[in-house]
Length: 181
Length: 425
Image 1 (cartoon, each protein chain N blue to C red):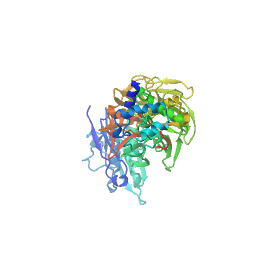
Image 2 (image 1 turned 90 degrees about the vertical axis):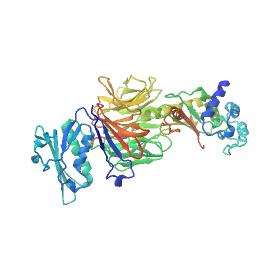
Image 3 (image 1 turned 45 degrees about the vertical axis):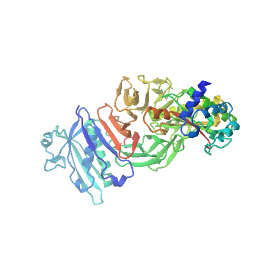
Image 4 (image 1 turned 180 degrees about the vertical axis):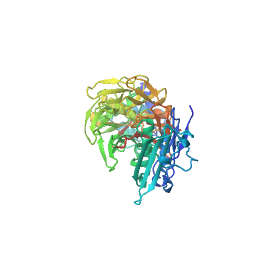
């Protein structure tokens, strides 16, 4: 459990800018556990959607848009040259896998990215591998193959244009994009 | 080694015609072990034209790093024909070879361009040609003359008449360009707000295959340089990338992820169904055809780290080619099929290397920190690649013996993804 908490904190820290300042701190983290175990449950989404000061884009009943839900976290980060899903992100992918299982009409594209080092084409393949790794894990938790597309941008679309390790760490990433996002 | 620095500014006279495009400027850093001293006498009558042919010939030759220009100033009168040349004038100045020529206006607006190449030491004529061309072809004619001189004096085919393709990025705008091998005459092939990469010339030089992300995923297109029409060649589920032409121009090897991991497939140059060539559970990509079409080199992580492998297309046999280091990628065959260039990572540095098939010997050719995307000139003597200086993408070239180095920079944009086109037929 402790490990899950740390993982969730890490995910929260890394998922840039979707959290409003008022929600910073540990409070929302606890509330995300129900979302992870009961995907698609409208109750938790609705409850958190009403948190004071939450931007109106959090539509009640849509946990994908609820900043308090783990389902609003859409990025998975990787080690250098690696495409193994780190323990930190397993609960996130579990939540999305279960959401897709509970919402068969939902469709997701996983976009793989790499840091700037190395061959452009090899990085496209590496980013693809990262996207495929996330897809496989979501399928373990109930998502169907047809619900998830995977593509890679390689190193072509860096989120952070810097040339140091902190930029590279941010760019070694899968983004989860739901259709209609 | 003496450090020969010759700066050739190519920007003037092009600003008006090609102002919108990224004009490349070529700088030579380091020359060959031995350079051939050559005197190129300004052509008689060329001062009547805004573009001097002899100056372009000299720029081509010195850029190759294999020639040293001997100043022809002070020889009066200037010879324009072989019979006017007094060899002692030139051997006395240290020139081993002399080029003389003329440009004569014709009534229809064209000009007759004549040149003669002489061996000053042996006092013998090596070549003499004449061309009747309109002014729009003066540059091309100069490159053809430089090709003749290069071939006569080095024994190798000249590549001054060839073209290169590259991608320029300016802000969020990507542009695929084709230019003469000296960086002149850049023509925009396609522009996009999304990344463009991996241009590859068809063997006949009429088409370019490339990868575009305009549909929020990598997709392979083939575009005609004659009509500008483009065709979607590979747009399967997942990523589509790394096109490489078969030597007969009928097919492309591409990397597709449609069946679960990035694997190499063969597809018609105008699309159609894809035939799988490689079978691993990991990454197989960056295929490149051998000049004889009987095998491909590719990058695979099947051994735990990305390394270069060779696949025989007849037997299906696969042989690992690289062993040193844990990151060897982006193979490209030399045109004689005797070796290949690739990118090696050593420590944090990425450099261009060359490996010989017979000896398996590896030579590291470059010293940058982020050198990538090598492309070999059709004569096998120069390797064009992408590098970085001060955070900006540049193109650079290195001779296959590592001695001659050139740097090609564009004024206002990042340039990358160079591809050297084939010899003009």
